[in-house]
Image (cartoon, rainbow, N blue to C red; front, side, top):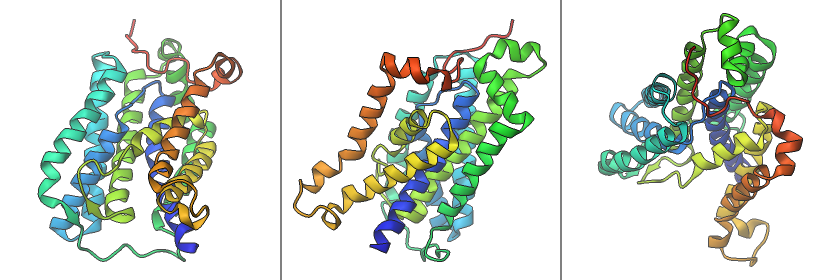
Length: 291
């Protein structure tokens, strides 16, 4: 049972890290649906770097750097060029799916390194993710930097008049967000399941995207949602532990994605928008052109 709980927490860690990166970008008004692509890049390049250098530190550093570069790329298209943010994000996802399959193919198989040690039975990355949730909440809710981020996500025109550099603030958010997404991918490939294969994330990035909306852009609710989805994902792999003989494991594997779709359907209703719509950053997904 403890192994199941530990693995659930490890899975929730990846959702938390990736979703925190998306939440930060969305708070500044930038939507990035290419989370899965950035995670794939981070996971693949981190795996390759760690295996070639025999160093986890190098692998994570490379994954974070790749995430920052892709975050910058999305920022260039979305902020500087004013391209449709959904199109830009989908382009990154498609690029990630195709390019990592080609580049990572020679590395198919296990990482071949000693596993990262736990701390009192907990993954060190789970502890780090909880700390990052607290930091994210504090920065967004209690600091002047958080106020600037929320301002450019709500009304960039007013923020600009108030002396806030909208483009610079949004670039900062998408770059840091990309770093968290790349790091999340590396945590998957170097710690949670250190075996490389093409498209091994299997939709985790899209679950992380749904978690941001599920959380109403609140880091603490996001953590709770991540814990729930981490449990559901692990349950889908080991349903016999709790519900032996109930459905096949293949049906259970669809449960996290079915719940993701249900969450998105509920959030698209008029009732939800009327009751909770104020939580959504007003300028989310809208390009800003300085007047």
